[in-house]
Length: 321
Length: 286
Image (cartoon, rainbow over all chains, first blue to last red; front, side):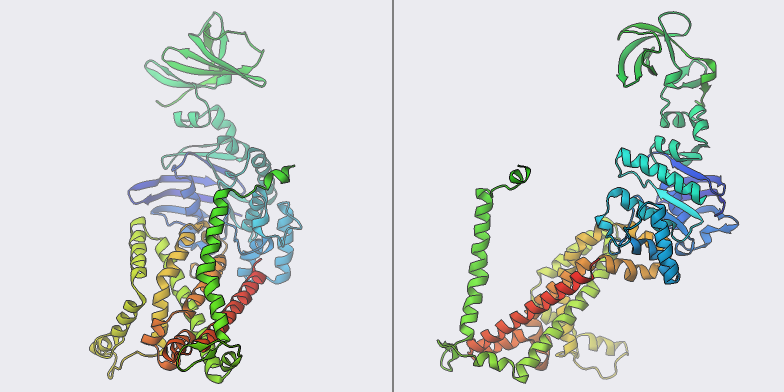
């Protein structure tokens, strides 16, 4: 395991600039989530680290080694692909053993390692099973075990849970976090799901249009998004414009409604109850604000009611315009 | 209850289609096959095609060294041709499938164009290309690589080239859909696990596509057993396959019973080879 440093990385596909001067330092054993929409460059970073693409400019250092000078098959980077990319002609055990066999490990060592890895991912006893006979979650685990078999220095995962249903995805998120913590392996995890990133990452790198918008802990990202894009992407959808000043961001749960008092006046356009949560849409001037609270914890209003909207100063922060 | 609901009676439409399919099979395959089997037991008649009888001598002749050797040679040249055509077509299809959309279309149209050519035209084209003065030998002499050129046909090699050319576009077009839709990340995963890129073809692509390549090879094998023009145009008499000999006996010598018996034996041998291949392939599938 080692720290990974990306400096001034650039990559273009024809006239499309996929990565524009990306720099980030990752500490040994850190779990990084690359978060962003389609085409923002997050998968390109992963492929450049793995060596599946060649960069145009910049540097990727693993410890003190320049990864860009090492061909893909010699980098020892474990990668789980979005499609999983299991070898369909090999059974579970042979899939996991593939890299070790190629590296010339002794047969006894391979057998014990395959058992250990399948045990690690909760697939003991399925060594001889065809991969086609496994469920989506089980295939996911085989892909993880296979990628970890050569004890890689860096572990890359490209939206590995995107094809799983919500319950299985939550389960796999917990398992991958446990495995990563147990092995202490430096991990890059690509996702477009901010909830997934929040659940997994030590640090989230939010990307947009080939650039890093913000790299911060989930807590910091949520409480102090650096840009309007980050605020919107992670679900803070109240960006309030102010005359002559920078706009401010306020989370829905920070908005307080009252029948009178300080604040800005608005009108409740819609409200709905989602279990214990009450969500409202309030028209303020030409803008719609979103407010949420625990149902029954505040004053009740009908749809169409005129209200005063306010928020504590410490829960609002200015954003670059 | 659930199982009973699942079992649906076939509709009139599907019954009609099944009946039509059975009828077509009966008219174009079963009836001629039965007729061929019946004729194979008839007595040859030098004055005509056959006399109605029940004799084994037509089958007995198959086990003479000549027909036995020809049948083995047919199996060999068809098997070699089938393997070669797949060995050439598969890498080409892999290459084409990684090209841009417009370049892929160019290749597909080219392959379809090749399929439009008749066996006779292809045979004549290769005959000219392999001729001493006008074709490849003449060109090699012109560039100084061959001092005393001679015609490359008829020969076993020329016949194989003709067979491979004939089957090439068919195999390429059969393989193209599955190859172009393959999950490229499987190859990338192999490289991240330490496979040198030059070995990905042998370690991943070939085994992954074995399930497609084996049936295509067997199909080509059967197809090449029946090819008539290429062996006669590009092969020497000793390279002729059983198809040519059957035609020669049935039409040239007017000995239909012997031709029918040879065809029945070849049919049985072919079916046995296909069954053996299917069993072996199934055993090796994980």
